[in-house]
Length: 159
Image: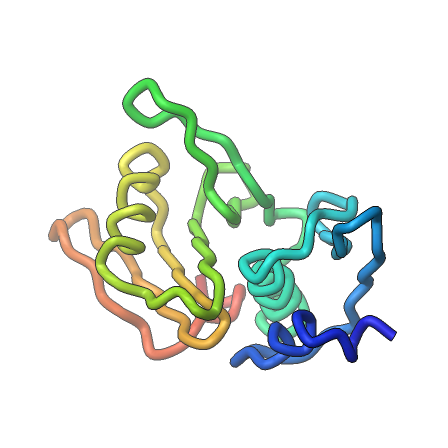
């Protein structure tokens, strides 16, 4: 069974609720089903974090699955970038950007700089960064040109 593979086992220990995974072997790659893209994607440590976090948002924080999108392209200074996940409002304007890193990647200023660059284009109300072990959520305050860190990921009903 796949769960006994050492590489997969190492990826199991995150600071997020466990969910029923759908993992298959395709050639030499393990693939995990992405409920947002509705297809199998290569299972990497970052993808493991993304899938856990998406399930956490949908199942525990009541985020509408239909308003979340993975790997969303955007143009930033004439270069193509991809946001890991975007939460949209019901009018389909961006509300939140979520950036994932593999568990072994320390969340440092460089990661916040990356998501801040994406926000130059999208101007969302919330920014989240997670490596599956640590999660940071910021609420933007454009009027005062500042932001504040929240103590928890807000439930969708509170956004």
